[in-house]
Amino acid sequence: MKVTIFGASGLLGNALMRQWDEDEVVGLSLPEVDIRGADQMRSAVEQTRPDWIVLAAAYTDVDGCESNREMAFAVNRDGAVNVAEAAKRAGPRLLFLSSDYVFDGKKTSPYEIGDARNPQSVYGRSKAEAEVRLLEVMPQCCIVRTSWLFGIGGKCFPDTILRLAAARPTLDVVDDQRGCPTYSVDLARAIIQLCHQGASGIVHVTNAGDCSWFEFAREIVKRAGLSTEIRPVSSQQMARPAPRPAYSVLSSSSLERYGIRTPTWRDALERYLDERRT
Ligand SMILES: NC(=O)c1ccc[n+]([C@@H]2O[C@H](COP(=O)([O-])OP(=O)(O)OC[C@H]3O[C@@H](n4cnc5c(N)ncnc54)[C@H](OP(=O)(O)O)[C@@H]3O)[C@@H](O)[C@H]2O)c1
Image 1: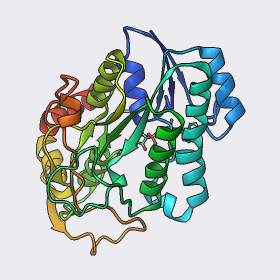
Image 2: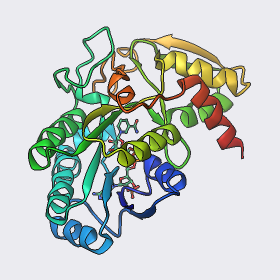
Image 3: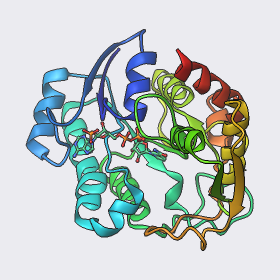
Image 4: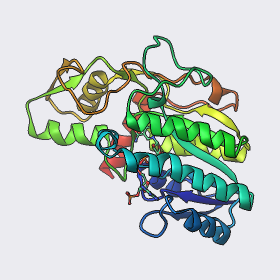
């Protein structure tokens, strides 16, 4: 199988490039290809002739999207449509990465794939609109929603906590947002399996289990052997430009339909910390 990955230099792209060894994989990213260019996308797809495209490229600065809306929609929605149209023309299947932020966070039980989208942030809206457009352009595409991604090769929450915890005796972390941390390696492995199985439609992929950012930070510090005190605070106390869903736990039932189960986030965190040490 031939695979082209857009966004290969990002957090997930990095893990995909490292994990995907049984197929012929080409990784592309800025500055060589910009998904905002429809012609560029057509020629990149024609030149690489993949069986599958994995679209991991995105403008992922959630707070930045609030003040740079044009860029958010140009990359996350219109760029994704450019890739889908190029794929439709040349024939490969498409797997697009989306986010738990397409939901409003008002539920108190895990979000299923059919739950209504109601994004609260510009980033969430750009992803939600991309999902709708992609399903129009290419109804058989696969949309993988994930959440709270961490791993080697990019900025992520555990990395920030470890850096801050090494320099401070106390850290305040929000305790009123609940979600599923997801290790880029485990997400990459699930994506590879989904492509091999010819997946289509929406699939939720996260590590198993859920927590608040506070609980996640406390576990990171504990497992790293640091003595920094982690203190729970509310989202109101830590106001940020983009609103985040209070609850964005994604149900694993859509993934289990493919016979795929992911390890717990605690197990994933341990492996991430090991990977970081090597
Ligand atoms: N991170 C999370 O917590 C999270 C949660 C849910 C869903 N997701 C989704 O999962 C996917 C992967 O996320 P990630 O954390 O790996 O993102 P990331 O680390 O920010 O990587 C994004 C990649 O896209 C590239 N890119 C940005 N604009 C581009 C453009 N116009 N044309 C081509 N490439 C462009 C970036 O290149 P440069 O590095 O050169 O800018 C980078 O390689 C994204 O679709 C994201 O929305 C992420």
